Structures are given as structure tokens and as C-alpha cells.
Amino acid sequence: MKNLMKYIILTLLVSLSGCVSMEGAQANFQKINMERAAENQQILSKLGTKQFQRISKDDAMKAMAITLQKLDIIVESSDYQGGLLAGRTKGVKPLSYEEFEVVKSIEKARMEKYFGFSSFGDPSRIELVYNAIVLKTEDGVQISLRGRSDIKTGTAEVASAEFPPKWLEISYTKIWNEFEKNIFIQAKTLK
Image (tube, rainbow, N blue to C red; front, side, top):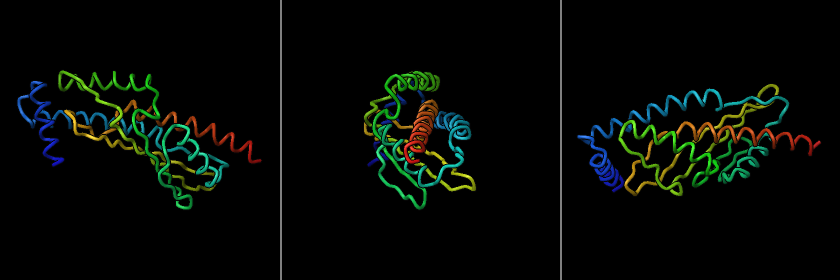
């Protein structure tokens, strides 16, 4: 049923966009995913993992849990011993609506390049999953962030497999900035 719905949605998009075939539409979505994947890889190499010295794994886990909650990312599961936090948010969080508009303008240009029109869709259907992995190092911790999009389809849209790169960049920057504030506050209040 889900594949049938995707086929119907793609057929609708093909007819609206002027593409001559389903294969053409699928090829365009593949190009968008490849562009996003390449941009996301650069962002991940810059913002995906950070080292923090003189911080215990326990303190880092607590600060990251607080960070995710402050950014409206609900921690759904945690393994403090293993160093994993998994959180989920719905809608545009942790982006503000102003930041979301920036993402939409960038992605609108990308969609228009391949399809001649753009529709970002209803942000309330967007669910984002963020994972933070905290590993103990010799002199502190290494923390890696990973995120994925879980867009609920069912309307006249097809979801991309890749995060919009600007969204990834803004959200990771916000997480790191909030984490650094929380770890600083935690260090001051626990001593």
C-alpha cells in the first residue's frame, strides 16, 4: 500500500512538473539526494563529532540530555553506560520558524532546478531523530551527533531520504552551542 501511494504521488508530481516519465522524476529525486548527501557529508565532517577535554562521560551525558530537552528534542531512550541518547522532535524544532524559512528558500531553489516548482509541505509531518554518542577518551569525551528525517508521507509529496543540508548545519550548531553552555554551567554548579 505504501509503495502504491508513493507511485501515485510520483505520478502526480511527474504530470505536474512536465517530466516525460516516472523514471525522469525518480532520477531527479536521486540527484537531489546525491546533492544533499555530498553537502551533508561536508557538514558532518565539520560538525558531526567534537572532542571535549576534562569532562567525564557522565557529565557529558547529563549535559547532552539537558541540551536536547531545552531544544524540544524529547529523549526517548538513553544508555548512560553505553553512551547513547536518542531523541525525537516533530515539526521544525530545533529550528526556529525564521531558520526554517531560510532552509525552505534554499530547498525551494533546489527543487525548482529539477522540477520547475517547489513544495516543502506541512512541517508538522516532519519527525526528526537525533542520536548523541558519547565515548570516553584518555582526557575527556568524544561526542558524535547523527540525525535522520522521518517524514510521514500520504499527501501529494515524496520525501527525500536526506536531511536538507542547511537544516543539518543549523540544528547541529544549535545543539553544540547549547551543550557547551550546559557543560559550563554544570561544571560551575557541581564544584
